[in-house]
Image (tube, rainbow, N blue to C red; front, side, top):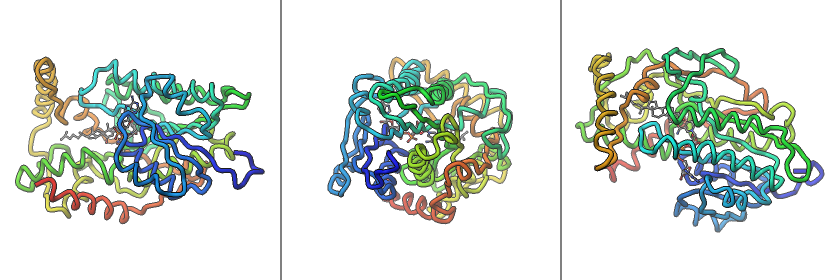
Length: 369
Ligand SMILES: NC(=O)c1ccc[n+]([C@@H]2O[C@H](COP(=O)([O-])OP(=O)(O)OC[C@H]3O[C@@H](n4cnc5c(N)ncnc54)[C@H](O)[C@@H]3O)[C@@H](O)[C@H]2O)c1
Ligand SMILES: CC(C)CCC[C@@H](C)[C@H]1CC[C@H]2[C@@H]3[C@H](O)C=C4C[C@@H](O)CC[C@]4(C)[C@H]3CC[C@]12C
C-alpha cells in the first residue's frame, strides 16, 4: 500500500465472507474499492452466489477453510495486503458448546493475527460486537453511549466472553512487527444488532408471525431501546476502515468504533415492525401481554428443556435468559468517532435501509407460506 503506487492493486481477504455480514462486505468491496485487485473469500461454507462474482474484472478466489486451523488461515492470508476478519460463531441460543464458540471466535482470531505476523500482512479490521461492552449481567442501561462512555462490562455468556477476548487480542496485536519488520495496524468495529437483507432472525420472526395468523405478541416494553444498524452501512464502514488504516495508522491503530447510522432508536420488537408491518404483520399489545416474571420462567424452562433434550435433539429456541436480558435492557449508541477518524458517513439513509429490508422480506413471502 505504498503512496507512490497509486495504481497498485491490492489483495483483500474476507474471513466469514459467505455469512450475513460477510456477503455484504464482499459485494461492497467489489463495488466500492477501486484499488481491489484480488478478493479472497474464506469461509467454512462457501455460498453458490460466489460463482457469479467470478466473471467480473476483479479476481475472486473462494477458499473453503476453517479459522480454527492455523495452517489453512496462514495459506489464505499469505500475500494479502488487508484482512477483514468477520468470521465468527454467532450463537446466543446454546446451539454450539462454549468450547466451540471459544475455538472459533478466540483461537480463530489468534490464528488470523499470527498469520498476518508470519506472512507480512499489515492491515487487519476485526468485526467485534456491541456485546463486548454490554448489556452486562446486571442489566445496566447503556443509553446512547459512545466508545468512551463508562460502563461496567461484565460477561458470563460464552458468546460475549469470546468476542471480548478476541477484540482484546486484535487491539493488543496493533504495533506488532510483521514479517519484513513493519508494524501491524489493527482496529475493531462493534456493530449493534445488524439488520437488512439476509438477516436470519428477521426471517424467523416473519415466519412465526405468518404462522400466528399475521400477528406477533409484544413481550418487551416499548420503552426499552435496542441499538440497530443496517448491514449495508456496517459493510461500508468495514471497507472504509480497511482503506484508511494505512494512511491514518497512528490515529486508527488499536482503536474501537461502534457501527452506527440513522436507524431510529426503538425497542427490538417495534424496530422489527418497521419492516414486518408493511409486510402484513401486526404487533399486538401496547404493553407486554405476558408478565415479565412469566418470560423469565419460560426462558429458564427453555434452558432446562434444552439440557434434557440434548441427547435426542437440539432444542434452541430464541427465548432464553440471555436473549431475554439483551432484548430487555436498553443499549444504544450515539457517536461520531468513525466519522472523525476515517470520514465514515452512512452510505444508506434510514429510508433506503428500511425500503431495502422491506423488499427483501416481501421477496421471501412466497417461500414462507
Ligand atoms: N448479526 C449481528 O447482529 C452481529 C452484531 C454484531 C457483531 N456481529 C459479528 O459479525 C460477524 C458476522 O456475523 P453474521 O451475523 O454475519 O454471522 P453469520 O453466521 O451469518 O456469518 C459468520 C460466517 O462465519 C463463518 N464461519 C463460522 N465459523 C467458521 C470457521 N470456523 N471458519 C471459517 N468460517 C467460519 C460462517 O460460515 C459464516 O459464513 C461475527 O463476527 C459476529 O460476531 C454480528
Ligand atoms: C424476548 C423475546 C421476545 C425476543 C428475543 C429477541 C432476541 C432473539 C434478540 C434481541 C436482541 C438480539 C441480539 C442483538 O440484536 C445483538 C446481537 C449482537 C451480535 O453480536 C450477535 C447477535 C445479537 C446477540 C442479537 C441476537 C438476537 C437477540 C438476542
